[in-house]
Image 1 (tube, rainbow, N blue to C red):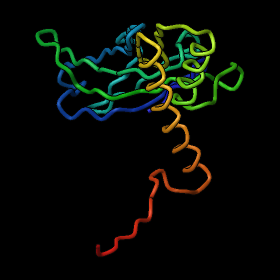
Image 2: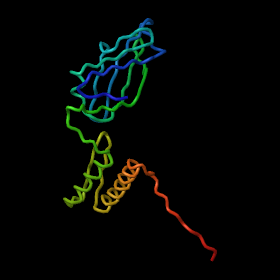
Image 3: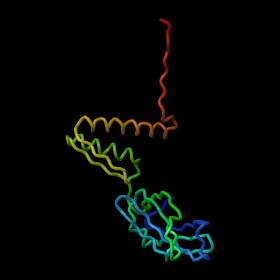
Length: 173
């Protein structure tokens, strides 16, 4: 599921155990490590077990690009129950500058910058992924790891395999 920051988001959820006609109401949360967005009951319209969510563009404008968890909570006046949960990717709109590189490319760039600055401590965070390393040797290992991932992504984008194969020959000795 994807939300574009700055644009109206509309989606209909089918929640068989949470019928509006049985007195259920739905509210929600969009969360990640840095943000919690509350989705008030006024954003949901229920028709039987079908729940339409509409988040106005004035609200999504404040959303920061990244990966979030969307949780819908059903409430009937007695119980509050988890009705639905999924991952949501919030993306910047075309009108907003954004980094189109993969997360692996962004991480590799930050690691290379730290190495050039001769930092022996690195702490990175991109889209909810965080890495902290101490010592030049650990940072070099991290650089090699992300370089392999970036190389695999580039091979895949060029139509190649992400898996490298090596041919070997055996002889009877």
